[in-house]
Image (cartoon, rainbow, N blue to C red; front, top):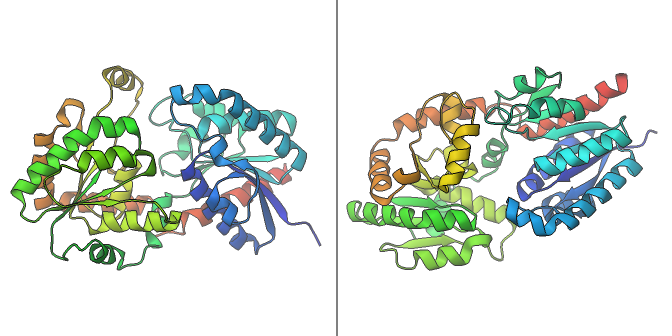
Length: 399
């Protein structure tokens, strides 16, 4: 009887932990449970049976200035991870997002143990900036698993096989109970016919500092125009104190969705339920816009960055259409309004929200197009990713 396949996974962020856990479940299903896992992950991957070298939190640091004090620890963990992979000689090393750590780890493993199959799950954004990273990836990975349908050609032009597996948000919303939005309204004591605005100003302190003011002003102006408006604000632990202080004087009922004393699944379910029970949403640019769109809630995106950052972005970004909302990029038009920089102010945001709330049909059409492309009606992304990993292993053995 042959030994079970051994897959080592490395997730460097909490979002990667969720992706990794879903991939582990899918790999077990694809192999009939004849598989084992070790590597770097968080609570969700540990719950799926990951034998942990060290936890994701040890290398999960955001931002340049935040990274600097932790460089010695990160380099120590990098060394430990390389040693663990080379010693274990797994059938595959799957690195999940965390682009910088993943590249450093895989390059070192490739030099020390070239027979190990290497897979990167979540591609670097070569379609937006730094296209040279596709050639760099082709030198160290055997397979790239992408979330977006237009990503594979960038890598395959460099000789790296890339599989489009679909975006995990479609798998996530499929797990949500159909009555979850209505149940959340009852929990928050919001009438079924009350108008609801969802406000999501981000999960980082810098985002809260720059966005909570104009978002709050927009909510107040909208409340003057729409009788009985209620506001729901999902609150990340990292910015809970700042958000709570900011909304205390908002002149309408505000419901904060806090995450304390709840499991990760409960937090995610309540967040998506909030997206689904809102009539319109005002959100920061980023993943949250995609998640709101997945629940088919019309929205307005607002964002501000420092002038120096704006200057750099405008010279680096390589997009066929200047938009920072993925749904717009997928459908090739600005269906979701984006108010950026000086245009991200209370009156403009409120006026645009009112317009979208009155008629969201253009956005609904864009949502249907975008999420069909994301694989909403196909096999779950985690199953497609699992098949990509197993195919990569089989093909490397044949070389």
